[in-house]
Image (cartoon, rainbow, N blue to C red; front, side, top):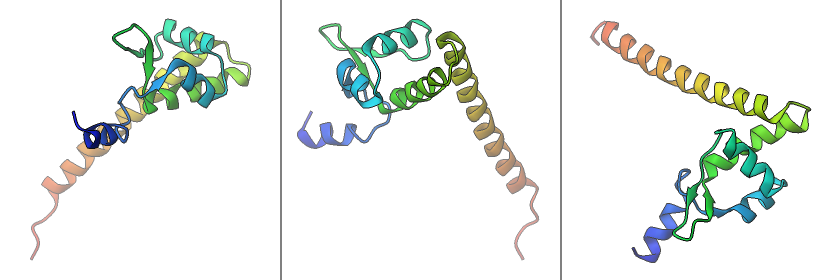
Length: 112
């Protein structure tokens, strides 16, 4: 892998670029919080060859949303479930919009 390949991977939302310590610092939380949301199966960090947790930007956004809910007084297990359901809803809405666009293009009259 070249340096350019490595740099381009940093633009990938799913690339596990952040260590647990860095991720916790970026979120303003503890490493224990990251472990807890991992145990609740909200996010599953990848592991380095040495067994260290690595987080992607997408996972950090999910963790940040869970932290918002916890900071508002929601128990961590409930916060994780809410975030999972929000993510599933967003995905379902995206798929529905794609189906709607496809159906509209099939049913639209031909251009004159």
